[in-house]
Image 1 (cartoon, rainbow, N blue to C red):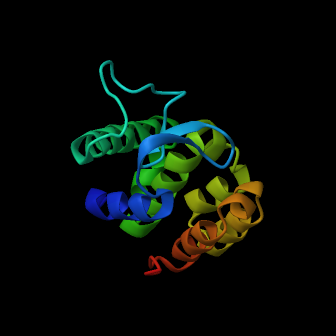
Image 2: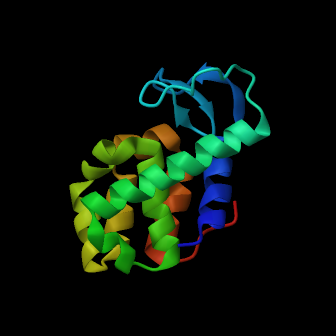
Image 3: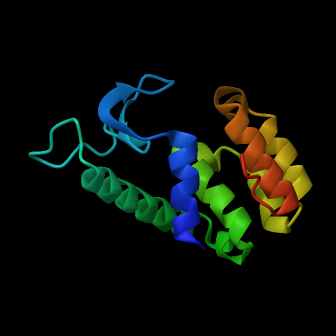
Length: 149
């Protein structure tokens, strides 16, 4: 999987913030969607964060996301690069627990039924919450090509 593309997509979808803020569901967040409740900032770090600190958090969060996907959904590595990035993006946003709630979508992905998976993704509370991000990721899941915008 192209980690540089995933990083760029997450920066686009999550945004980059150097100070802690409450996300759309009230979770304390900083950097590129870093959940400060699940993973507090390292001791001695203060806001505003530096670019290096944001990059460090993002690299750690991507590695953690990939490890959780490997453990929970080992078949995900059989998908093409675009669809792997879609799943990683969703897991990054929802957490592994939230992602695993997408039983119909995940089953369709595992079978290679990508149009069904995309429809299931869009038929969710998550899709209503994230709007354009869900549209873009569902399109990429269905077509195997990541839309530019």
